[in-house]
Length: 156
Image: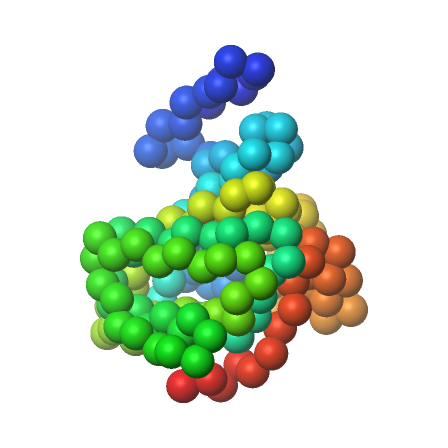
């Protein structure tokens, strides 16, 4: 990976990894700071049954690309099943969540524009722990600092 003002390329096998949970690695492809805040991208392997609480971000639009697997995505009041090669657009400020509703691990790519929406994950990876092991006060402060608000974990 080479970065600089003229852009850079990241090979498929490149990028810093963080195990959000055991069996749930996130690999960072484009850091917000390396793109002057324009965009941030990471990919994530997601075990069956794993997902997010309903939440929103106040700093970025989000695009989710489903590389593989079967997922349920909630956008506002609507839930929808999506699978490999689906794209999901989440406008800034929209309450949303997703969950691997399949029987096998899936893989998602997350694109935040501007890149500020990914900075919470970029910062949490520096804690050197799985997401549930990070002190909840620290985790909540990081999310709040980067414009996240969480709601219901059991939204289906």
